[in-house]
Length: 87
Image (cartoon, rainbow, N blue to C red; front, side, top):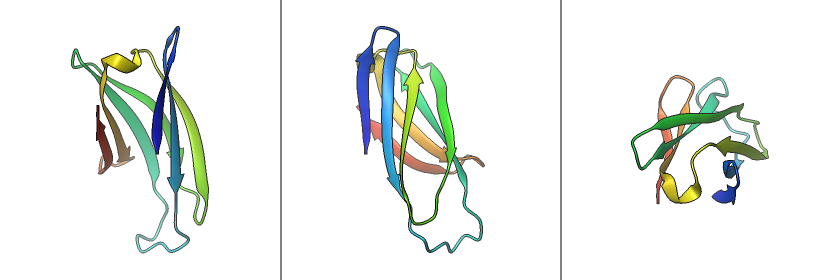
């Protein structure tokens, strides 16, 4: 789940992820979140690591206003796309 909250300085982004305790990949990846604004600007807003068998809540910040954010992207550290949300 991802939520965008307007702030005077831009947007607070809250993300909830749930990870299984089973891992067929061998190691737990790091993730990065990016937002793409209407003007085409892409901003990396945060990174985190998976926690096996846990639900994780992370909060990030973007300088763009919520109405200017067109896409929220999550990728693994090696660039593999995991999540893409379009507004």
